[in-house]
Length: 147
Image 1 (cartoon, rainbow, N blue to C red):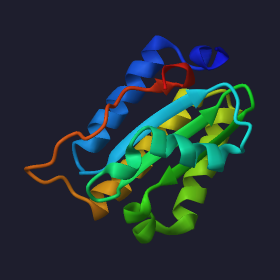
Image 2: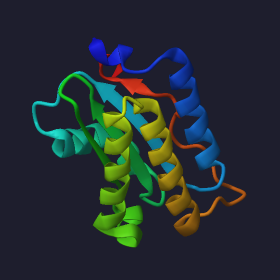
Image 3: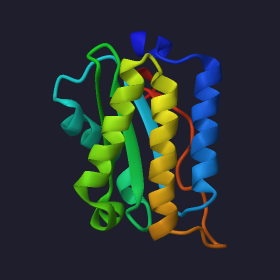
């Protein structure tokens, strides 16, 4: 699987740490998923993966998925109904634009970490961390072969 080589182990750790830090301020959940190909288009595939990862089952419907089809050079970032109601499509388009700038410059991990930060800021604004919140989903980067 070529997606496994998309980022280094150190970058994978940095992405996981960015997710952990973002989630300390919110009840929302952020995941990153890599695979080689997306035959169904990145948005449709991201929606499928979102469900497969159980992201549609968060209590407040406030999950965010960053999906990357590495070989196809396609990606998507999607949010569940709770966060989408608050931020709108322009928010996601802005994040995708910034990710694309980083990806084009050969800075894949930086683009992902920046997207995590922006998503985390929005999640913290609309879904702040509360004392009884728990980390509902793993912060690990997921690769298609592990799904």
